[in-house]
Length: 222
Image (cartoon, rainbow, N blue to C red; front, side):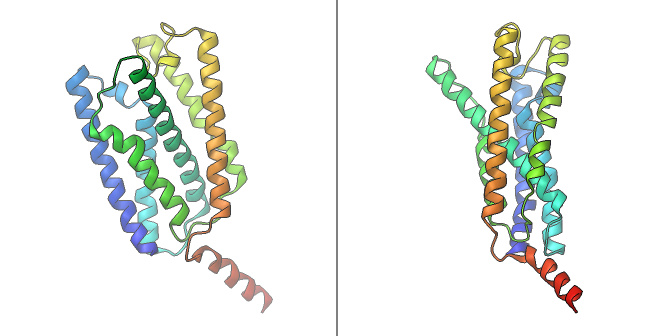
């Protein structure tokens, strides 16, 4: 089963790459040369990080019986970003439709915002060989979003483009932007905590992650 998940991770990583390339090509055809803008979206950066982890996790699943703890922590963080990206994209889409401005997006957007996060969650809950995530991971979960916000504001002020309306000073006031960012951070922390709780309560089957610890204890007792 672990090897099956390893193969699945590599296949999903390839699907993510195809989706990213397709989404980039679609963006270039619609809005012109905006490569830098494309890679400034939080969703795209999260998807790239997930792809790297799926490749690493896929190779390790084919070669070893247990994932290293650092990989588990990284997966918890990136999974949180993917889920939050899907939630935010869904809210923006519904808001646009409610205001009479339906969003026309390619299939790759649905894959990046919905399909891949769902797979990532299934992998998190069911893939064998995952050690229990530590609560200390939650302290790291806001580091990248804070860096991303600072980068986005600085870059946006220089090029006059912002990936999301709630960071655009021409659409919202500084107070409104701060409130949006606060609630976004709160959602990230809540989702991250939920991911860790699920990871600690739900043990993948079979639970191979316990084998090295049991073996080590037997050796010490002898």
